[in-house]
Amino acid sequence: MLLQRNKLGSVRPPKRCRSDMDNTSTSDIVIINGNSHPDLANMVAERMGLKNGGCSVFHKSNRETIVEISDSVRGKDIYIIQTGTKDANNNIMELLIMAYACKTSSARSIVGVIPYLPYSKQCKMRKRGCIVSKLLAKMMCTSGLTHIITMDLHQKEIQGFFDIPVDNLRASPFLLQYIQESIPEYRNSVIVARNPGVAKKANSYAERLRLGLAVIHGEQKEAESDEVDGRYSPPPTRNSTPQHAPISSSSRQRTTSVSVGVPEHPVKVKPPLTIVGDVNGRIAIMVDDLIDDVQSFVAAAEMLKENGACKIYVLATHGLLSSDAPRLLDESCIDEIVVTNTIPHEIQKLQCHKIKTIDISILIAEAIRRIHNKESMSYLFRNVTLED
Image (cartoon, rainbow, N blue to C red; front, side, top):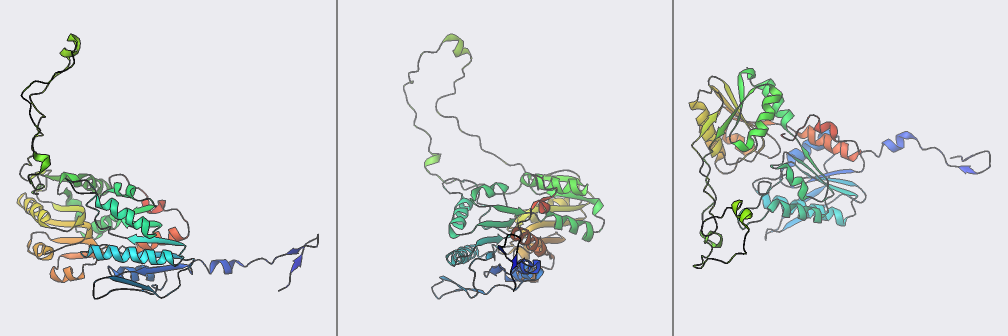
């Protein structure tokens, strides 16, 4: 190759061809996955025109997890696709070990693609428990993950538990498109929230589809166990009246004292199931982020049927469908259950013919492409509000 000289006589390096730079655009992407959802990982890799990286995850006889990465990951961008299933603890350990293996192998960045984040429902303090989702976030950050891609978190505030960027994608465009294209006469539908906690999400669907809204109030849900422990013991009472500092006459008129002891908080009693809204002769569409224990969905469907709903659909992003959920759904008055493939549920589909799946691999592939090319993610969050 000839070197060119400028007018001053110094050597000027040759110009680099644009094609040489473009060839490295995808050569430094490696997609690996654990045992939670290999089909989804293969679909994402196929949509991106890549081959799934060589990573094997298996368990020894003592149930310890072993990770072996056959390809070099030094200086590359690693995307680990690992979702949460009914085997959540093994899914988490596989993800943490894969991330740490990539970190110690000098990977440039490690992005965890977790369509369904396990323990996301344990994001609030209850009794003497703990906020498990925050503990999980700390473990993921410590393992070496530099970015998280997830979908429809149970509570959006979970993003604040992480010390790394979190992109919470939305599956609602896919579900809305399904309603418009696959539910006949959807204009005669009403969006139903099976409890007041889902009312915001249901209202968002109703506004986008320009449909009516109904809310089921008084969900048949058992409260937390009323075990007798230290917090239920009443405070000690004193026979003698405590001595208070003298209070002026003007302050005494504006001060109200309670009876002896600390006032007890009234017990919350839920009313029986009632429907706020008209569903008579209409198609009822229940929406939620997760469908796992289906007893509440079945009870809500029976209430809708008693109030004159002609057809009942259930749409959710994550279809965990644990225990005997397929059997209960198959025997219920629900006509169709629509979920995305964030969680594998092929076995459940064999047990219940009402379950249908929407593929969201194109959304995950587009998110990976934008992150790798350092493009803005705002396109994937167009028209997304706080209620979505």
